[in-house]
Image 1: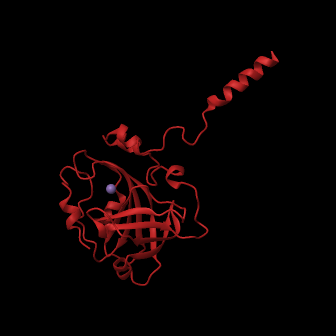
Image 2: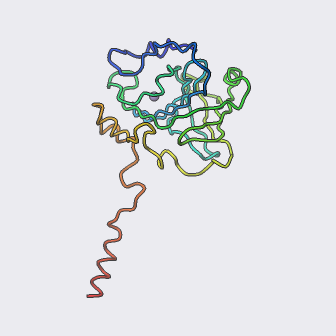
Image 3: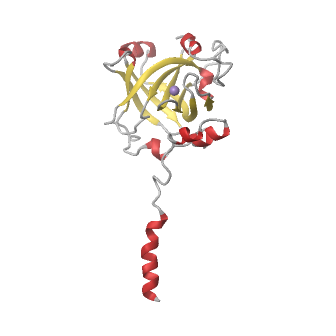
Length: 227
Ligand code: MN
């Protein structure tokens, strides 16, 4: 666990992301942080982060989490991030590493369902419970046979079967920040980012609501008949 890779990839004189300078040692014992950041970079993805040994273990999940236990979501492990990164919401300047808009999509605590987290990570099978604002219940990260240039970095994020499993698409049903209730486009607008690009990561306008226009034609006909 080291933040060397995190620091190598970023220029903190340009990006507003946390530099990871603060030391994580000598903290009082408390629950382990869990956070998902929705990130509209070159591709939209959800950064899934679990606190362990003073850093945030991190996986990029292109499609985001699914509450459906039959759905396995690819999760590419990326460099460890500093703990304070979990509170970062804003805009990384274009041209910088990960340039684009970042939203804190969910946060809370996580509880390992194994005795030895380091051993579970090594084995590639980490079971845990999430106590977030959006995600709850039992989940697993399993390492899978990868492909491409990083075969050992491929994991799958899967919801376990419990009473919190569901076929609802939570990324569509709950698209807003848990910190600020903003959509990606709002965050970009208020932080000098690319609003149009950010908006492509928000649900399409009217995707959940039926257009009120569909009721107009029959209403007019009805009125015409009665006159
Ligand atoms: Mn990211």
